[in-house]
Image (tube, rainbow, N blue to C red; front, side, top):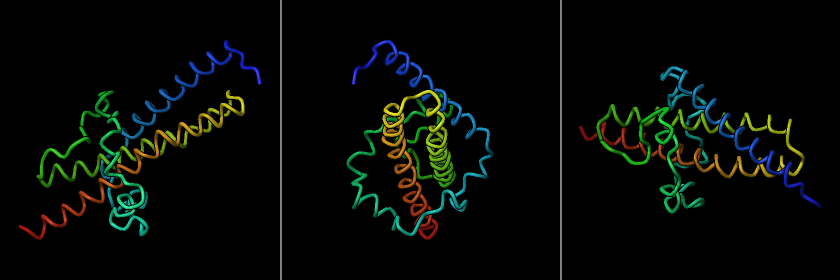
Amino acid sequence: MKIDLLNFTILFIFNTAFVLGISLISAIICHLIPPKFYSEKNPLFKQRFWEFDGRTYEKILFIKLWKDKIPEAGEMIRINPFNKKRLRSLDKAYIQRFIVETCRAELVHLLIIAFYPFSFIFNPTLGDYIMATLCIITNLPCIIIQRYNRIRFLKLLERTRYVR
């Protein structure tokens, strides 16, 4: 199979612009949604039985080994300067805000995946497979991290409620 370098370069540039565009659009959409939507009680963000209070992520996906290596894009692009890289306070309001931000970040990554099929319009079949793989590889870990952190912070809130 011969690859036309000019077409490859054009597709590469177009796909890069597409990914950046849908990422930005997804982030903007998620910031226009009112914060009350981002609740752990919302069926979209509720803990699933198979998550076993985060143990699935620890025992099967070994999340503790890799989660800190994933960059935090929300802070980098300054759409939402709330840093989700580290827990900076044990204050109840801060933890609740952190939970909201994990929901928001999860939805951003879900929307990016949902918008991805629009790349079928301009990509050849091989490009579709490459884009699908990249889309999953780059967004699924972020979704997993948000779900894992939310479970941990909800447990933390529950513990501090009984301590006081």
